[in-house]
Image (cartoon, rainbow, N blue to C red; front, side, top):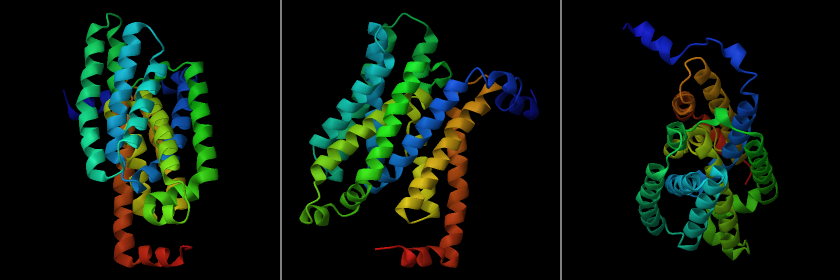
Length: 293
């Protein structure tokens, strides 16, 4: 098999125009998830919670696996698992070393429980596979409705509590001194992060959630130091990654997760190059100097 034949199996646009109307709800779900993940991603980085996203996604996977085995709603199981993990992480300490130790415990436990119930499940193999690699092309109207509600909640939270949340993330000690309810904001943020992580599992699977919650935000941070710009660019990058990944996967008929992660990684590489130019030419210093206090 030649290299061109291999590439054609990976990337082609056969029947894409015919399939796009069929997956319209999936494209909408991908766009909604991109908005939610993109808005919350910069705050995840500011709070140093990148590793926590992985831990939450594994318990989300465990909840989804249990729900699949019991014949319950997989989305509901995924949400319950991720929110439980987020609340536990919020309650068990904020120090990075302590938090990372707890997450290191969550990871193998959640993955092990999820794999156990997937092994016990006697239904279609594709249902098992999709929890690890994602499969949003089968999204239904109810899932889109849940995702839309979560996205609206993220937008409202960012608009109303964005400034105090960012303040508490960057300088928690000073924020507490100035009366910011850091503990309550942390719990609220972790619950919302759990909800977004649960829905991201539906798109890219439990193993690759960070491609939507972390990579777009990290790419945005390479381009701009301003929180508002980071959030805007992160949303743009996450939407392009999610929707672009779905479109690219249609022709080959492959799982969408490798396409979503590849688009997200390519965007990061481009922004990494732009970030290097910013540092070399001093653009970053001028931007920081111009940013409001």
